[in-house]
Amino acid sequence: MTPWLSIIGLGEDGLVDLTPGARALVEGAEVLVGGERHFELIGPTSVECLAWESPLSKTVERLAGLEGRRVCVLATGDPMSYGIGVTLIHRFGRDAVVVLPGLSAFSLACARLGWAMAETTQLTLHGRPLDLLHAHLMPGQKLLLLSEDATTPAEVARRLTDAGFGPSDIHVLCHMGGPRERCLSGTAAAGIEENVDNLNTIAVELVAEPGAKVLARTPGLPDGAFRHDGQMTKREVRAVTLAALSPMPGQLLWDVGAGCGSVSIEWMRAADRAAAIAIEHHDGRRAMMAENAAVLGTPNLRIVAGSAPDALQELDAPDAIFIGGGVTAVGVAEMCWDALASGGRMVANAVTLESEKVLMLLHETRGGELVRLAVSRAKPVGGLTGWRPMMPVTQWRAIKP
Image (cartoon, rainbow, N blue to C red):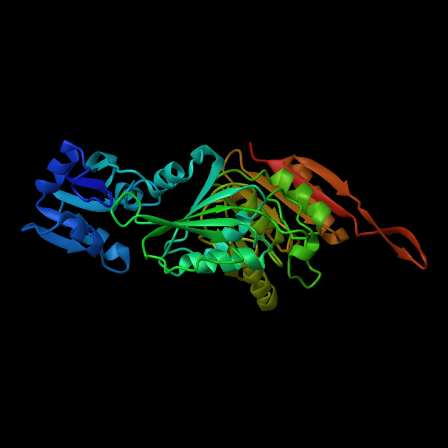
């Protein structure tokens, strides 16, 4: 198949810095696609220009009707780095598209600051919730953030300060690679005094103030990190549960009877691009779950109202399943097991005799392991200290053959 769709990454100098091949694709196009900023960068043209619409999917579908013509999409920097390239290749196929990237904002920022890119965490806040930032707030980390607009740096600085990272150095790099390039620096607590351009990239060196509440991405967050009504998988059991579920990059968890969402949120925090669907029938707990997801940096947690097994219909196929509530409902465990592909992991916890019977039957019919978890915490006893046992938890875990 001969590619009919080209994607060219532009810098701030427009056509000037393009390779001869990239420039030939732009100048030989029958249709140019991009934003107003891109059209300004290349200057006047007699070629048909198609501006991106909102939502973006409208223009993507319009492109489908242009197949067979020479179509050139103008992008910023590297189209494969949080850019349009991935979307168009997914829609039209790899053989239909040729991509000639420019320098990404991340590459340019590292070059300006002298940072090793491999030692940074790269995120986009363009068109995405700023709550994503919260999962990456750990001392010593270097963050590179693509902004939505001129307001993003101030909001990032505010959130860092509220989280106890006010001493962090923050650099706002505007219009990198062109004549309007400038870098504004300060601390999160002090903010950036000058006006910021809409096109900017934020670089942060995270420094925590004394006493800051720092939450690692290792499973087993303190119970107090979550808003809950007492119906939650407690810290020690949660850590064991997540170890059995084995979060992996890009994989999907079903959290059945999710409560306040502690397991699904920690699943998403534990591995890059991990996703979760949390099923919960209780309105109040779903509200707490959404709040917890935002505060802990997993705003993309998908929350489904309802109870298993009905609420499990037509969900995306999972890589792992946790049943924390409703294990005694008829058919739930079997339906979950059937939904798993070979190699999928399933974990179910029980605290009642009735639910424990279900786990014993699963162990007999499906194999796996049965484990009894008993945890005691030191608590005041009069003027002294003694052990207060938590309710023991029976856990069944298995990997589907």
